Every structure is written in structure tokens, then in C-alpha cells.
Image (cartoon, rainbow, N blue to C red; front, side, top):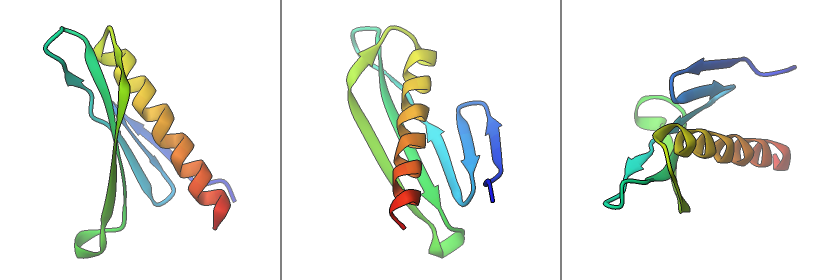
Length: 81
């Protein structure tokens, strides 16, 4: 079965995972890419935050990169279980 995908602004829900881009502005005026991959609900929830070394010219570029990396992580994790 193919898991349902729901896209909302800078976040994607893929099966049990919520992948959210969290770009942040750097002092240089560029943007750092960060992504949160969360699963579960309430006190049983867990989240992994990943920060990346590359910087980007725009907020959207950083968000798109972060979402792609989060999706890759979910796909790799899903295939190993």
C-alpha cells in the first residue's frame, strides 16, 4: 500500500511521519536548512532534527532542500524495517 502524502506549506505528512522544514536566517543574509522528522502522538512522539552545512540564497531554497533530505531519511528508514 502507498502511504498517504499531505503537503502543507513547509511540511509534508508521509504515512506516520511529519516532515517539516525549519529554515533559519544567517547573519550573512543567506539561509540554513534544517528539518524536523516527527512520528507518534502525545507523550509517545519522537522527533529528529537535522541541520545541514550548506547555506542557501533564499528561504524557499533552504526549505526545499530540507524537505528533500527529510523525505530521503524517511524512505531510507522505511526500507530498512
